[in-house]
Image 1: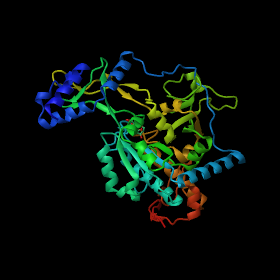
Image 2: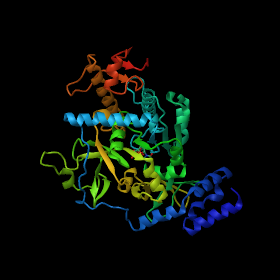
Image 3: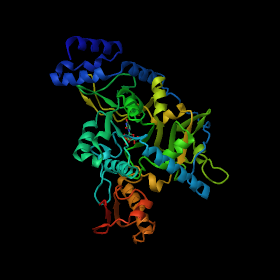
Image 4: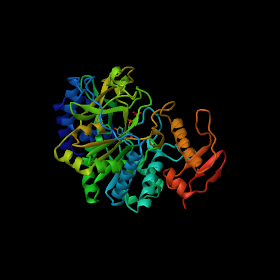
Length: 475
Ligand code: UTP
């Protein structure tokens, strides 16, 4: 960066009261200086100023007033013959739409996975009970299997952050993109935002490094707009985007039934839910506030609302969002053209920093704020939405924590329980404990079968392994 550009950046920092960021500049070597200048150059100062104003007013946009949420109409799990026929209709419509090449898959994989505490992008986490198949492999193979079955191309877009971009792209390259055509996998980076102190100042993480964090899964829209992803999709004739998160190996990626329901309803955005396992399960609540469709975080609902039940005993707000969506490309195009931005949420966090004397500080209490956008905040902008319940045993097993609930161990058990049920349907005996959990070690590649129906139709031969079954060979 030349002198005049540097001067310009210094002026910009001064204008926004952030010049302390360069206080150790003279102590840095040339390369470190360039890194810091590059980071400063990337800052959207207007946005930073906006975040600072949110902080000063201690006011998050669209804060929920307890007691105002109303339940929404949901396509629940089918029980009657008509409802089952409805699922078949949706599947046929979804498969036709995918076969016509109108659907792309969008994976958001830019999170830091702090709760799991795994060294590397979460998608590289090994979860397959026999082979240690990674989350990225599961997801990609599911798309590949669908491409093969429907004789079509399904472009796969993957959003990473600045922090895990190289590791993610290198991992895919090393694994030869899991057999999917390289030209149909596209990576892009989400934005990063500086953390701010209670007084609205940026932090230095090191003398030559700003403290920045990814701008949340809702940063997807900003990143898509900046990286011309919509234009790329429009060029490829894509009309619908299946959106999902990296953490669940059970997710039915590009689920034809969900896509079909979305298309048949004429929705602009759709959301998948599970019925909560208990009133306090940590899932967002879908409903309406003042006639607008919204997701309200579990932390915001009152106890009374969480416990409320209908006459049939079911929870009034029992449908929890599992962060799986379909978007119309035309809907996102409208948001882009109308310059609509999702709100920013403030998270009070402990942020390690370098103080004015150059000492490394590790705060014991939250000392600053990170700013994040959430993708479900796009819901109120959609003219029409569709909400569909799914069966968690077949579709939802997120890996969030090291141990206990939502842990890798739980996800592996959920995979084995699902695979075990397919084997039993095929007449293959499976060992279970008293609680019904499958004890055999079982893994079925998505390329062999993606669901019970395919498994029964294909009668695959297992490879022999001790204490279980592996179905990994195609053909
Ligand atoms: P989570 O909310 O679980 O966050 O992300 P996380 O960062 O992965 O994990 P913790 O909270 O630090 O433990 C849900 C999904 O959204 C993506 C994640 O990669 C995951 O697929 N995500 C999250 C992003 O793509 N970008 C972000 O800035 C945040």
